[in-house]
Length: 297
Ligand code: HXC
Ligand code: NAP
Image 1: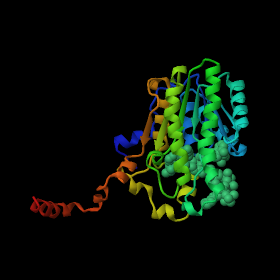
Image 2 (image 1 turned 45 degrees about the vertical axis):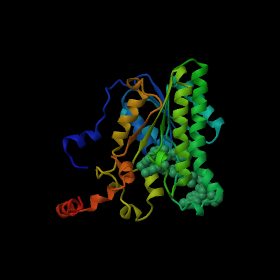
Image 3 (image 1 turned 120 degrees about the vertical axis):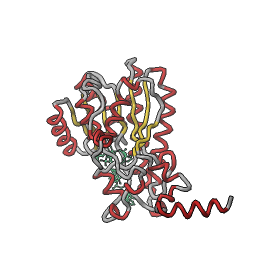
Image 4 (image 1 turned 90 degrees about the vertical axis):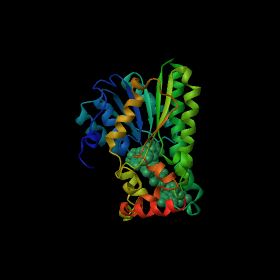
């Protein structure tokens, strides 16, 4: 990224130091990638954190490193989001440790590229179960808890821009993320009266090991460089996503409910615009193109 003033701020935290003080936040898939980056920033802002996934060793190491970096309180709890009993156990552990839970980030996901006709039914289900069923399980457990305890709550779903456009070659993921987006808008209305807000973030490309190994394996990362698809000609910085997520889980966004906020440098709109490919026309060609089009007037 070029180091001009506007892009240099992409590496900096945005909110004031106590923005999440006293809040307990669960992040599924919080030991790696974007979940870890969001969690690290939440800890810096004073939150208590519960990070969960299927792999205890990964979670424990992440929790230790995140706590050392931020001096915040973070616990690692194994929880396969596909299994409702594990989600309930995770919530119980979170409440036993921190007294209450204020927010849930549905961030855990599974994905890989494949022509759809090559998928087995089980491959399709593997992605749907993690993304859609997992997000539903966690939202359900937390929603029941908040409503029972008459507490306000906050759900933030991490989707993708192809949740609203669809995408070839990642069809199970597109179906699942589209479902999570529908759930976001539905619960925002249904649970709003309980003081539970539900929002989503649709990120464009933010390099992570998990996503890049499965979506751009081998030398595909060179051939299919994501930044060429983005009008701003760069991928996202994790801190930029963390800033947006922190705002959405904080009380500063208290009147935002049912919204999906895209953070993709304009990527999906470029893909949608019929004439977007004209960016390949060299500047010096536009004089002759103008002449030719004016002739038609
Ligand atoms: C075809 C595949 C396959 C592949 C797995 N399967 N990989 N089929 N092509 N590349 C099939 C298997 O053969 C099996 O079907 C079924 O899928 C389940 O596979 P398992 O390995 O048993 O599943 P599991 O251990 O649960 O792993 C789930 C996973 C894996 C989704 C397959 O990739 C995973 O654990 N992912 C978690 C992390 C992740 O994906 N991160 C990226 C998120 S990025 P059969 O029929 O043989 O039993 C993201 C980005 C969006 O969402 C946009 C970015 C720009
Ligand atoms: P990642 O590091 O691979 O994160 C996925 C996480 O989900 C992992 O920690 C994984 O941990 C966890 N997970 C998978 N299956 C699970 C299960 N059954 N139960 C509990 N946890 C499970 O990838 P990432 O790029 O940071 O992705 C984070 C989120 O951002 C995802 O929702 C993804 O769709 C979204 N996103 C990413 C990008 C991007 O460019 N990176 C773009 C758009 C959207 P375990 O394997 O240990 O369980």
